[in-house]
Structures are given as structure tokens and as C-alpha cells.
Length: 322
Image 1: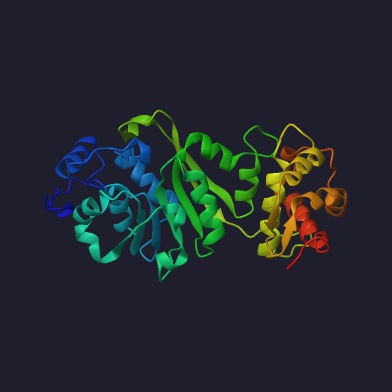
Image 2 (image 1 turned 90 degrees about the vertical axis):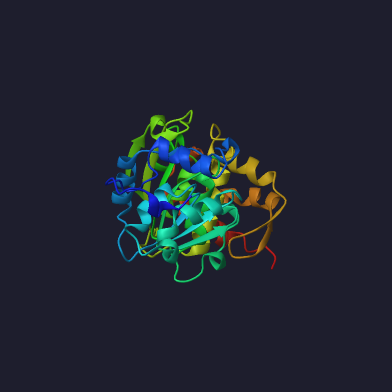
């Protein structure tokens, strides 16, 4: 195969955005789709255009992409951005990408690695400012939160995910989809746009509905207006996990269950703490944060979880060890 340069210019954003073109690339390389890797290739050029528009990809942007597949979205990104660095774990696809992305090879870098193990050192310099991907659905939620936590240089994420995952990302307080994940992601990012994508836009069609959602990085603030310190945000995430350990229970009971079942763990500031002693601290934490322990986790907003995280760091000092 001669590469993407051999495709006729039919006005499409990506020459691979049809079922026939996708099938031709896969057949030319003697590979098929792998359900175990969540491979469903996007085959609608209009959806690509909407992704590029929602992400506001510009000519100076360096983009991070996870799961480029055969390069359908990657081509669209490269037509608008300065460069793309992509992460792909399927050993069959680097050869495909070398073919389909040949005209843009000087502005494309591939990291052959599991996206869940990606580090800033893997990405290199200059760091990308935008994360744009049609994500493998099995790891989408984990990857998005992990990247906002790990990579402070990412200003936004515009990602294709399963509709139910997008619902969790965008859930309002007090709704059934609002949980620990919503709270934790909301401490790092806020929803800035979303649109639905049906199964018919993929080859092969998945058995679920999808959505593209944009998340912009945010810096949460404490009650006095000061930016929350990274260790306070991380402690708030820990308290969110505790609050939703059993969402049907009150905060007091859910947090008691969570911490009583933990052994030694590291606080966000590096100190080690035993789970059991935290149970005795819970009344003090709730009082310090002005949070009624009779409430349930889904009634608390990010500000209240930040207060709980701050209280945990401040009051666990006597029980913690260096």
C-alpha cells in the first residue's frame, strides 16, 4: 500500500472516514478489529469535523492522542494542529500508522505502550496542551482522570467515550450518576461541551451509544478563595472514595467502613497512615469541614470535599508517621 498520499482528495477531513476505506486498510495489512482492545473505527467525517471544532484544534497545538487505530482521527488532527503524539498498545498498528500517516510523518510521533502506564518522560518536549482521542472504552474513565492528575500541561480533553461514562463525567450533584468519579474528575476539570454519537458511525458498530465530551482544566478554590493545594485536592479525592464506599449509607457510616478496612496507606503529602485510627478522627474531620455526617455522599459538592480533604491532612498528623 502506498500510504495516505495515494488517496484521492474527495474533500473529506480524513480519507479513512468511510467503512470501505477502513476495511481496505485493515485488509491490506492483514488484520481485523480486536474487540478485546475496544477497537471500533470511526467512519463518519462529519463527526470528525465536530470533534476538531469542539476541541478548538489550532495550528500551534501539540495534541496527545490515545488509541489512534489506523489514523482516522489522527489525520484530521494533523491537518489542523502543529503535531500529534499518540499512544498505541496494539503491536499490529504501528506498521499501519506508518503507512496511513506517511505524508505527516515529520509531525507525528508514536509511543508504543499501554496508555495506563504513560509518563511525562514518554511524551517528551514540548508537552501537548490538548488531549483529543477516540478512547478505548474499557479504560476511558481511568485514562481521563489519570491524565488530568498526572499531566498538568494538559489544558483540555476532548474525548469519545461510552455515553454512560460521559453521563458520569457530567453528572449533577444529587443524581444517580454522581459518584466518587464525578467528584474527583470535577476537582480537576469542568465540562465545556458535549454531543452524542450513535453506533452507526463506527466500523464495526459497537453495542453501546457514545458521546464526545470536552473537559477544560480547572483550579478549584478553597472557601477563602485561595487555589487548593495539590495535596488537598488529592486528599479530597480520598475522602470522595470514602464517602461513596457505600452510597446508601450516611457519610459517617460509609467513611467508617472505608477506613476500617484499610491497612497502611500514604497520605497525599507522603506521610503513612493506618486506616483504623482514621475512624476515630471522623467526627473531628466532619466538624472541621462543617459537614453534617448524617448526609450522604451524593449531596456534597467539590467545595465540601476539599474542606474534608483539608481537615484530613490537618488532623491526621498525630497518627501519621514519616
